[in-house]
Amino acid sequence: MSDVAAFPIIFTLLAVLSASSALCFTFWSGESWPRSLCKTLAVGALCVWAYAVGHPVLALALGLSALGDLALSRPGDRAFLIGMLAFALGHLTYFGLFYSGGLVELGSPQSVLVVGVAAAALWLGPVFARKAGALAIPVLIYVAIIGLMGAGAVLQPSGAGQTITLAGALLFMMSDAFIGQERFLQHHWPVQSHAIWGFYYLGQVALFVGFIWIG
Image 1 (cartoon, rainbow, N blue to C red):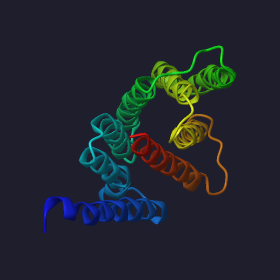
Image 2 (image 1 turned 180 degrees about the vertical axis):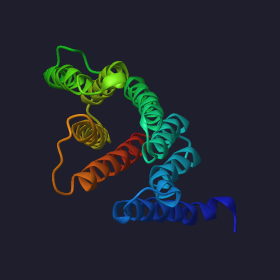
Image 3 (image 1 turned 135 degrees about the horizontal axis):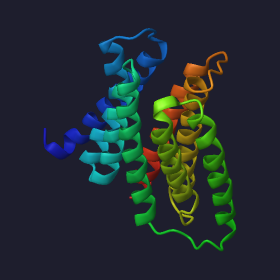
Image 4 (image 1 turned 120 degrees about the horizontal axis):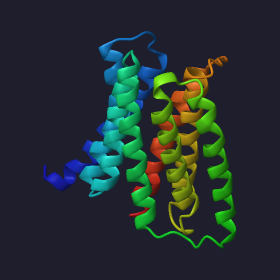
């Protein structure tokens, strides 16, 4: 079997690995290295896939996210800080992808949405930081970075994949907002952990599909 002929099989295996790892993490409670591995492979498989089809920058964004997943699955503030750093770099990489495709002018109708994204970041950053203790400054910086990523998603020109990547970015932001609510504000509600993971994973899948579609 040639290498080219093997690609559909490899991509199918990566898709199965990603989806099954995401489901494994969803229904596996407690802290353990096997559970951390499931969380890491869910997006890590997409990273390998992106690299295999010639999207190294997208692969970098997904790889940094997978590293963040691994760190956040471990206990302690140090692991949380490492995870936040990895995701911040991942968000900046995603912004680079949005920026490389060109951004619409700030006077365009869709740029009005940037005001909403900026307002959300300016509000949530201080709200979370006040309860973050020693992590206050990193939290403020992180929220600003994810706000920048969201703004980049909003300002994409209309075209193939734009709606999908925008949805992915917004789902990613909602997941992070729920994490901040849970960790810093101590607000808990039923199936919160499932919502955090579901929004995050679907957001990453949407970003992956959208950027692959854009080509």
